[in-house]
Image (cartoon, rainbow, N blue to C red; front, side):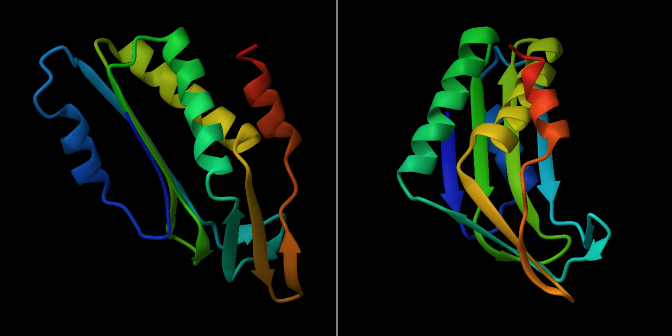
Length: 149
């Protein structure tokens, strides 16, 4: 299990290869990558800055992963979340889940993303032609996470 909060970009192929290497019990690997969009709420986005509190963020991600492990058979997992200034099309987040079966891998991956969107302590500020603006939480993200209760 690996959690990383980092400025550096990541390589999906290398991360999937690393998680699946050498464990013959793994029958499925599901992954998700989140990207920076160039438009949000009708405004052009030139960049987005993600902020977090080191230490607190990793502990929150560990709790989210522990909850997922209590619900599904997760043989391995990688969560990478970037911070700092990112441009449209840059990768923000990666979740890779390995399991014995696809159902567990898909469900755990979706759960982890829903909880990362709503429970992980990251703050996003977008740069638009009108200036900087903080990105508020979305009701749709809260509704998606609520279904896991």
